[in-house]
Length: 172
Image 1 (cartoon, one colour):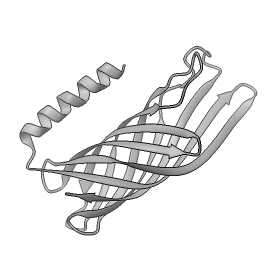
Image 2 (spheres, rainbow, N blue to C red; image 1 turned 30 degrees about the horizontal axis):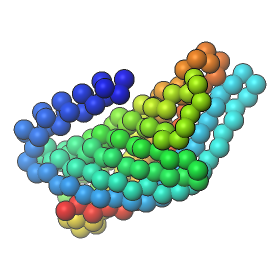
Image 3 (cartoon, rainbow, N blue to C red; image 1 turned 45 degrees about the horizontal axis):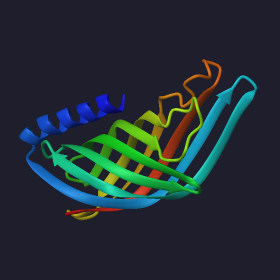
Image 4 (cartoon, rainbow, N blue to C red; image 1 turned 60 degrees about the horizontal axis):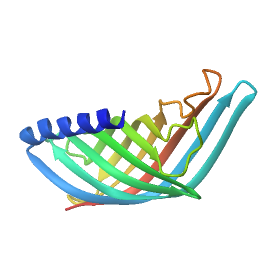
């Protein structure tokens, strides 16, 4: 699964890179709230932890209104360490600096895991951003995990990690 995601990302970057008008690299950091939820027949268990994230991005302008923004973000919430790898499609609303974003995201749990626990998950992420200047921006994003983290537990037990990210960034 990881190889398939990596191959798809390389193909997307290759196709987009040949058609892109403008490419900017950047860095971002901010607040992270990660929620782990386990659904069982006996009831739901949920735990929410706050922390931070930091990482790098590439903003690829397809045209003035549409951009593709792949990112690699390291997140830490209490004792949990996560790696977020989103590929966001961004739509800019007119010349306002406001953007709406959505796309797939891979989430890798960097902690030691137990047997039967899937450390890699596929999410759908969506959010909003605002370019303060040509270089500085703020954004907020929420990701919903689609993958069941418990591979061998059957259909009765499902585990997900959802995340809220609010941060600032700078494009070079």
